[in-house]
Length: 376
Length: 164
Image 1: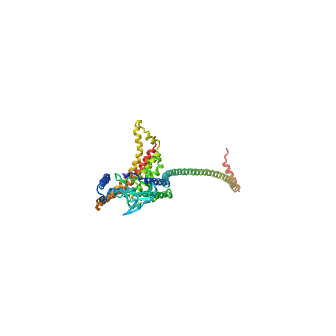
Image 2: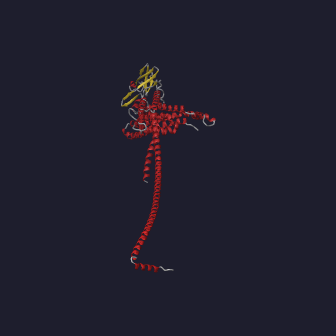
Image 3: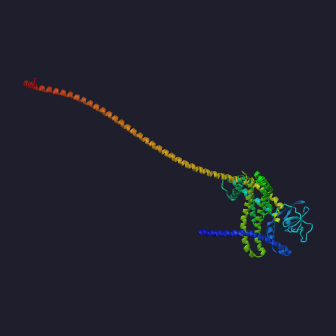
């Protein structure tokens, strides 16, 4: 009898947690909606008043976007190298030369070219400034219509990328060294921390999906799993070494999913291609099925890329929005609600960081497994 | 949505960095690590199998020992039994031969005694006869010392003799 009581209590708590978790999915669109309305009001009102008012949407979107400088604390920024492949050749300068300008008001001249920075994007500057002193021509949707040089800058995301590569090399080369030093012995230190994860990828992701040919794809699966996970975690760290939204950047997720696509396409066996081009259906259905299958080849990696991007970006926006509520209402008492809630979301984000790494790896393995599957 | 447009720079850097990372880790980390884990798992399996085999071997050996013990015991019993029979037969034989030997000796002794007795009797007879003749001679001599007595005596003898 006692046991059943405890069980009920646990179930209740679980239900509560689950309800809150579900509530997130309803709250998130609301926040987006609010962000849109606030944007609308900002554009409707006069400029000086809008600048005084805290714009949550702008704040959140600015934080999840890539940046040419790295915010340390207060007004301190680390200037990162700007590398541009422009009409005048390769151009390099420190982003500090913009002096914090992100409104295209300061023009930098290099190699006979003039550059401005607007919303962390570099444009060729217009000949003359517009009414607001911006050296860009704004289109109808308030986006610059100026041409852009190819931007190979070492941005905040690129720095995080390099950092994560260094961290991963340090961790896994060290671990590999441990295996070399203690041959046949039980793992120790970092090794025993990493080994269950490697076994998890091998036994729960690679083997069930890829069968006996799993070994060929282990390097990719392990690298992508740890890369996504470590970067998800780094993104959750709010201060200097972390904070960049690398795995919530579509460029990063797109590259990863394109690599999955390339592996799938290059390893697909005759059954895979037969299934796409000559499925086992009456010939007249080919008109419908073959295009659908071909689209399917590409929608799988696109879904992979969008899923990771959206999950991580949404998590960052949610956290920023909850903290931003304090500034929206301009009251410290809001923090009594928003900080615990942000903490709760933060804990869930830790889970999401792992789950998204797992899902990306799992689905990659699944797609590769479908392509190499032998039919009898 | 600006967020959905990938920036060329990050695409290039991500591709280079990720591929580089993957190939370096594949060569210097994943390959040795996975090989080591596989090797260790193989070793553990093998060790467990060996332990199982050793256990079976132990059981087999114990059974074998038991069997050997049993055999040894049976053999010992058999040997003891044989020894006993042998001993009995030896004792019996010894007894038997001793008896025959004894009987032979007794027989010999008896014959000897008989012979001695016969010899002694013969001698006795001789002596008795010579003694009696001697005595008779002496008596006769004594008796026949005077004439009268000789006459009486002859008369007596003659009396005894009945003429038929």
